[in-house]
Image (cartoon, rainbow, N blue to C red; front, side, top):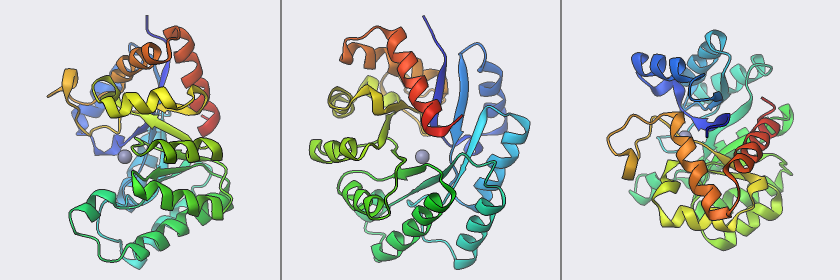
Length: 258
Ligand SMILES: [Zn+2]
């Protein structure tokens, strides 16, 4: 039995036109109430805003994705201006964070500049009283946690969290949220995280169009995959799926006020 869901993190603007159309057509049938569509850069933020005008189920967030070269000063200024101008239409600041994977590839020589950029967005989230969506995994999550605490941020979402039990515990203590993707269906590491983290602070997402493996191999990433994630979460938590659906929907609606 399927109940309503919200995809708490998707890059809807990054799908091909016909793929977007397909997802939009499936919304009712797949009980997808809404999607939090995060932005990678300025152009992406403009596009997500535009999409929201046509499809109100797409809830846009604006930021600069950290897994890419640093933006020009002008681009950051443009993103900040856009967020101020459209503050009533953006649901959150994101996707922002630190470039974990880029750094592993040896492509980041100046982490401090990424931290400075992140602080700009943390400031903005505070000023505008918006939730912040963080790409911060493994050791980076600890740096980001310290920054969030330093700025007394109340609403932070560590999307597709990966990291140690200790870091997870710090996130929980701070009252921040995490979300899991469809890889919760086949990744032991993610299933462990689900087992450790309270359902009250959990959300579900796809990070689409990012592709998945296992049962989703070669499939277009679609928010309907979240129904599979919820079955797994219910098994791990030993709860009725209907209760898990209900809790996750409530969490996401409250967190994003959507
Ligand atoms: Zn993302």
